[in-house]
Length: 559
Image 1 (cartoon, helix red, strand yellow):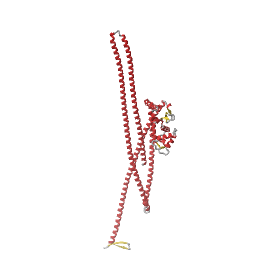
Image 2 (cartoon, rainbow, N blue to C red; image 1 turned 180 degrees about the horizontal axis):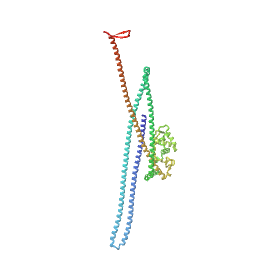
Image 3 (cartoon, rainbow, N blue to C red; image 1 turned 90 degrees about the vertical axis):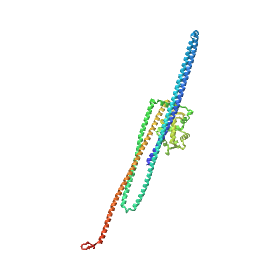
């Protein structure tokens, strides 16, 4: 029962860790989706305003051009009208017709320009209304998507709550089982203590009455020897059974780990191969170009009043120290927990300030005592004098928000020696400064970020599947153990019932034997009493005459 409780506590701890990791991942997804919504809204507003400005500029330019053409044509018309008037002075009969034709020509020109201007204005109004409708529809679509994601998040939270309630109910149920088992163990211990005391009293009685009950003593000694042998056999069987169960557990855990390590390696390789194939395909060009532009803009972005927090994070000594720690983790292929254990001298799970200073001395960075003090104060959030694993992981999470993707080997920060922006490859130790950066290296960083994100997603997915499978294996094993316990309980109960039957039969046979002995004794006593009565009556009624010569007795009836 102790091993079962330890397994259950480990399972509960692992389940809480898995739920905490899933909630953190969900928070990251929600933050990313909200950031994307804000970016898309600003992008659509900027596109709509820029398009409206271009349309207005186009319409105004066309109007100015038409105005200039009209002025030029009007001037030409005035000049031509003067010439025509000089020419037709002598033709007074046709002057009215010519002036009417000039009026018609002028009216046709002005009406044509007005129609063109009105048509352009209508086209601009239609395009602006279409852009407004597209913006409204896109806002509705993004709201529905965000609402769907929020609803799915609420469903997941409800599922997590239901799973937590189920786990709590299981804990309560197993705690009740463990408590009952402990009570049974106490009862058995008291019974064993009582048995030992009874055996001690019986032994004293046997020593006192050894001479009078040798046969009973031998029988009891043999019986005690058989019981001792049976007890030794049972203890040996229990030890062998415990060893066998422990070996089965180890074999099951090792086989499970080996199988899932192979599955994890295969799944990660498939995801990496698929991501690389997608990056090489033409369908990823738009995503690559967007990510490339974003990384390039962030890398070459000058400091502004709005980006003071970002500049502070990029210049922070704490971020640079954590990036150097990540470089050591990448190169040695270990995780933060193992790295902390190397410097945890008292195995407390926390690093004191002295232990953390020894860790900083082993990093490829030189800091003054004042800088070391600043780094420790920024990492020790609760000011308890110790740095825990959770505090370091939270600081790494902030580094991943500002300095690069969590699974990517590339980190961006401002080099304190040269005060310029640089990219640092954690795996190879390569440093690319701002004045040496080019588009090829930025595209390489973009592709490595995509591959690293795919690898991290694959690792998280396969570990969640592994946790679910291990929980199922433990549940199956627990059900097997409970079934085995139930079978043993039933067998003991059946054995007790059969022993009761055997004892009842033995008592019945002994009672029959005692009854037979009693009948035989009663018959013998009746015979003895009859003989005594017959002799007395014979002496009373019959005279015995001895014959001394023939040595015989003669009975003569008295008158």
